[in-house]
Length: 110
Image 1: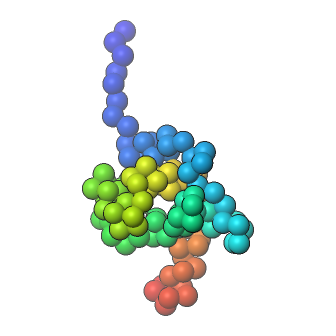
Image 2: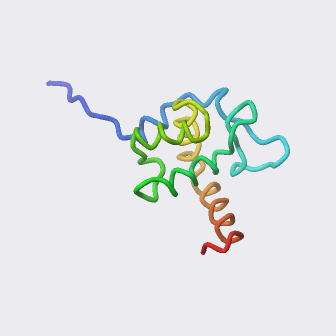
């Protein structure tokens, strides 16, 4: 029986990122929607919201490598950190989507 090599999707690649030490809770704002990259990095929701706004689809976990590289540049973080944010988002999508929705409502962008 021959082994079949399959190419992992962007989503699968991002969820393989080891989150240990890459994202952490915000010490001043509790909740899974407020986690951020370490060392006072951007909030995961901010990275995801940016990728949705700049990308060509509404699912940041399907981001192209080019969008990941651009986001890393825009936020002055590494591509690995962007992938860690995406992995955290994939595991906590409902909370982060709610945060993004609240931000949009407050900004008047229903």
